[in-house]
Amino acid sequence: MTPTPHPPRGDFALNTRLLRITAMAVVIGAVSTLAARVLLDLIRFFTNLFFFQTFSLADRSPADHTLGAWVIAVPVIGGLIVGLIARYGSDKIRGHGIPEAIEAILFGKSKMSPKVALLKPLSSGIVIGSGGPFGAEGPIIMTGGAIGSLIAQHFHLTAAERKALLVAGATAGMTAVFGTPVAAVLLAVELLLFELRPRSLLPVAVACAVAGFTRPLLMEAGPLFPLQTAVPGPLAMVSCVIAGLLCGMLSASLSISLYKVEDLFGKLPIHWMWWPAIGGLAVGIGGYFEPRALGVGYDVIGDLLHNHLALGVVATLLAVKAIIWVISLGSGTSGGVLAPLLMMGAGLGVVLSHVLPGNDPMLWPLVCMAATLGGVMRAPLTATIFAFGLTHDSNALLPLLTTSAVAYGFTVLTMRRSILTEKIARRGYHIYREYGIDPLERHSVEEVMTREVRTIDAALPVGEALAQYFGEGQVHRAYPVLRGNAVIGMADRTLLATFSVGTVGDACGTAPPLVFARAGENCRAVATRLARHRLERLPVVKDAQSLALVGLVARSDLIKPSLAHFDEEEKRERMRGLPWQT
Image (cartoon, rainbow, N blue to C red; front, side, top):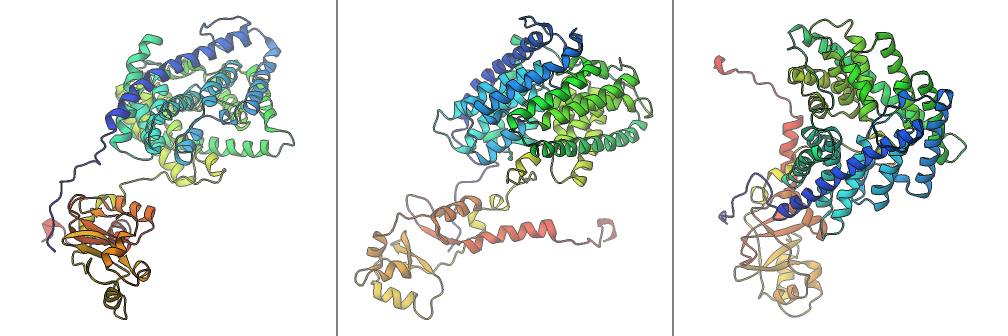
């Protein structure tokens, strides 16, 4: 058979529902921005209530309290309240949000409950407002994701489309909190989407853009930590590598310590509802000795970036923050990881700025906070652009990228899982974070199908067909049945054996509707169709109207792209001759 022309393939799979999903992302972006504002107000409200005994939304640091030793009790009270909310409301509010969002995406068909959308910001506001050493980004990612999922569940959408809207809500919330829309999109690509397609990237980008433009209406505009460092010199590259390795070590130690603490809590002979209160006790004791370790600490991060704190103060702050963060988060309370990682990374940078050669001392707190974030989350691009979005320091982009890449490489080589995937793995789900273009999606059916196909005439009697095609010389298990040039079915021994009289066409008339493939389809779509219908081969037709046969594709044909992929990935060869040697 000669090749049959078919519509040309484009760079991306055509999705006519893309505009509808993107329009929904606009609404989700706006609602998630409002939710971010509510979350920040809740944190301020509970901070004023717990530490200053006032009903106010003023932005005050818990470090300014006058409670004395009574401050130890405040995080305990917050932990007790959140433990009760988790037990009698929803245990999905436990944790820092991103692993829960990933689990919903990969294993829950992107379905989240209304309880999460309501209780996650409330519980996080209570925890952080009572001194919990967390940030608002994890809770808003969970809350924004729940908003996107809930809106999506009111429409007839696929799980993949719900995923795009869930992630759109999550990243729009992050954009609203930090004012970093590009970093939020990269977070989606590196951590949440597990694909890079227009159907997911466009809604996420639009939602983040809406949040970015809407943010100044509800919050202060501009970068959260404005900073300007000097242009880095050549010597800074060596310092970036050293800083990256040390940040990688810090990232690995924090991740390992967190889950060791979580294991210790799991051995306690009491219900997990009480764990956040125990974690709160550690927070209270740490906050008593170092008040600046309490709460979100954006003001402290700003001081660290500008080198406004003495070295001894920074070392103490770094140690206390790390200890209370690990214990509190390991207790299963509600809070985010980004802000604490920024503070701890910036603290390490301040320490290193006294010994690392090359460039502006203010550079090292900035690059170390990004590298620590990139190492812990294994998302170097997100960390780089996130730090740039927080400061708008363009001179630091190259050092940020270098240090984050080194820290990322260190944790990839030394740790099997990240702080985000370890929790999911402990629930029995393994996540493989590497992804590329599926070999089956790179090739069309036309490239792998059999063109010379043996067929059966629909008018042939069943008895003759059994003798000719399914006797001792049987070549295939099933054959296309043609009436004229059109395929009417696939005949196998089981189908024909049920008919003692009649034609092959009559037998095909009793079979389920014809399932076929088209030459221009990619192999992944056809492989899915074979699995869905539990078939081993499909006729390949010119179009759905004529059903003119152009070939046959079997499961064995779909191995061919994988063999080519194996050659690319595993076959090693040395090119002996260079162009100028021939």
